[in-house]
Length: 472
Image (cartoon, rainbow, N blue to C red; front, side, top):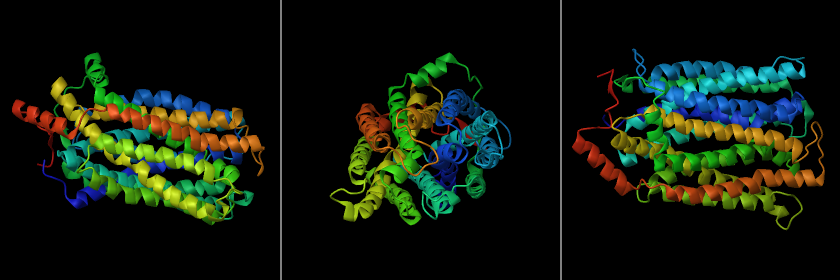
């Protein structure tokens, strides 16, 4: 294939908003809505997340493998993307708009049903969407550029789902009960659902000419194929590292409102918005920096550096955030600057990992004799979704059983406040550092990828061996 134009990459990158809007909205607001606003115990949210992660472990690899061999005028990926966009638009709104006057068990059933539909729709869009990105540009650095546009879209979506929504929900301060109403959460969900619809449609229409005809026979249950994928060292290391990092991110995000309310004691809606907005603006700026540096340094070393920086910044936040310390006069500016720096550092993995996974798909093609982008991205996505589900589940149980948060009150016991800080800063910092060490075992360097490409060329394969364009 020819290298995609900037317009194509921009439209493709817009699709990244779908996944991040769902992830950020669920991470920031779901636990707070169902526990503090609707009165559901945190353990029920944890159970729903736990059941959801089991579902994700099954559906993501299945969708990925099926999309490799899907036929029809929509090609292998685009039909899934259309269905996923519609499903996410509807189910996200329903998830954050539970009917009033539901009993505790009925509310749990609503949470369980709508979240499963949302998870399925997200997988139907995201897995083929990522697999499509691996085929847009065959070059080692070109893949990173495509990933950068997608990462920028993700961060823009995260910014929309955090900053403006925090103003909508908590414009009068985190401790203003008048703003914490179910109707306000429903309004937020409507706005975010429309954003998902627009971004999903843009990504689908913008890459329409790149849709491909499947040439692979469907054999989604082949044990030999899955053994080959799961036995690829680079795939296992990258997936484990990304899942561990994502777990720490989701855990921190799920407890973010508690952290800002009780540990940092920020009761100004403007300050809270600045804190959240700085993180995503920093991440958007970090996309360009990581993409530029990746042309000179191997991707796994960059990931290691970014994760180390994330861990260090998280530890620093634990000491700076509480009021009354030596740095109390400049505490808020330091938190905002640190949030921007953490956003820039943390986005490195999400710029580079899809590009690295495309390299893994090529390595798998050389080893196994077939290109299975969908199956590989599906298995990778399953790892991330498992991590996200575990993060929300642990947050739900930790709120009840470790921190001992008392719902519906603006004051918590001192030990509860400290434990919220530990869960939100110390635990994610340790996990980031462990992830940084783990990624060093990823062995697909620039030189080795060049050898893989040369071997495939000599064998007569190409990066488009998995399909032919329907638009050609």
